[in-house]
Image (cartoon, rainbow, N blue to C red; front, side, top):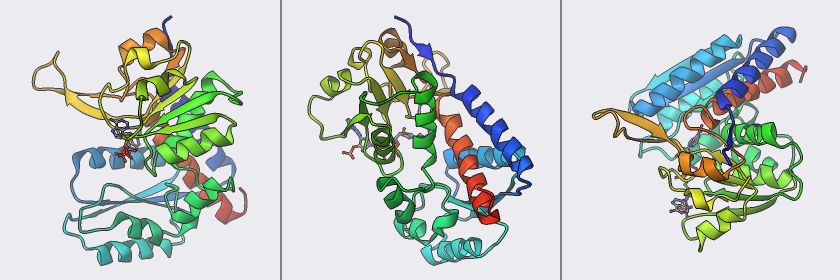
Length: 288
Ligand code: NDP
């Protein structure tokens, strides 16, 4: 078997076009404010891509760059200013933050109605209660890609690798809401390969390059590789490349469908951020 490759870039492009059409039809001007503290190179790239994508869909976007020595109080003041700005519908504080800043305190200070990342305790709690909320972008994008392959997920066995607040837990919650039978695994899980082999849907979000081996994948399974890992490119000495948490070539032999890295979940994360920002603006305008 050779897996169908789920083209996240194409699905994300279509989603961005749909968002742009809805923004225009509803005469919205959604505003996304991104706060970047420090000079982390990966974060710089993410922030630049988010800003560009927002503008392409008819949104306003602002990037607030703050120095690496920014204090928690200074960042709280910035968040407060954005909470009170009527042109701002979505606030994203790029993680990770420098160590002098407690990210949970910052996330909790964001107005939940502008928390387009869906990380605020109010949105996380509402997700767990299956109430309307901002759904975190990467888990939301992962679900859209799963549904590209299979609409009816009821009764499927889903295994999630990783239990982080931003990926593992919310994606597990969404799979549960889709009536899957869900197992969440982590670094203390015993017999991880065995757990994975039972999965009709396998979502890997652990941050370890090519960790999931080909023979961990059940024949015909849907494999969603969330991992983004930069490693040395042995074919091009001195260069690096991005790989996922799944051994793509080996897993493709067994899987029914699989997301590549890059070009899988990554583009969906940004598209879902724009979707949440549009939703925030539409709610404020009373046209949601
Ligand atoms: P975290 O580091 O917060 O969480 C990693 C999780 O993996 C933890 O729950 C950890 O378990 C588990 N884990 C680590 N090692 C093992 C192991 N050997 N066996 C089983 N489980 C293990 O990572 P994130 O959730 O933030 O991110 C995961 C990956 O997804 C990263 O590569 C990140 O770059 C990528 N990512 C991609 C995004 C995208 O847009 N595509 C967005 C966000 C993240 P424990 O809890 O026990 O420590």
